[in-house]
Length: 126
Picture 1 (cartoon, rainbow, N blue to C red):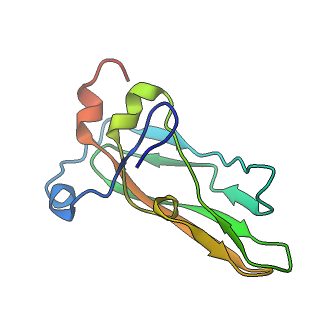
Picture 2 (cartoon, rainbow, N blue to C red; picture 1 turned 180 degrees about the horizontal axis):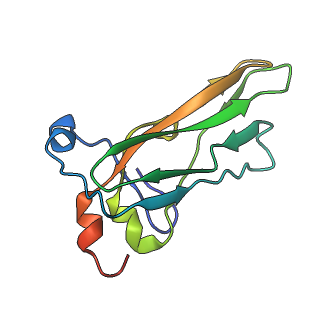
Picture 3 (cartoon, rainbow, N blue to C red; picture 1 turned 135 degrees about the horizontal axis):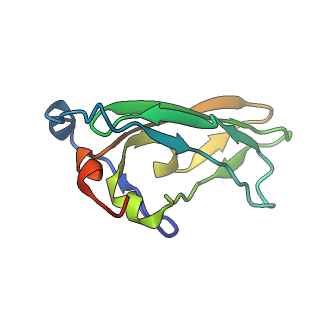
């Protein structure tokens, strides 16, 4: 639940999601990136971008592969820029909430299920 700079908010209750009203006239382009520490020998890439509206859930994917001949454990940190937007980026489910173990040569899709809080549309800073 922590990150660098603009931290996303983690693990929201589904009752909040069910009552959200989408802001259809505010389309947001969310761009993803993936950087891997030199000590983690994973091939790690991501879905480049997705378009969302505040108040609707969205699903994005990262892909990780362990090209080595031994199991490797990794854990991610994350941030949101611009930093002011971090409070509105809400992760419902994410591989980044816990350690991930990849067996030798294993490749997995890693989902990020999220929404942008509808209050985003009312904040003049974003």
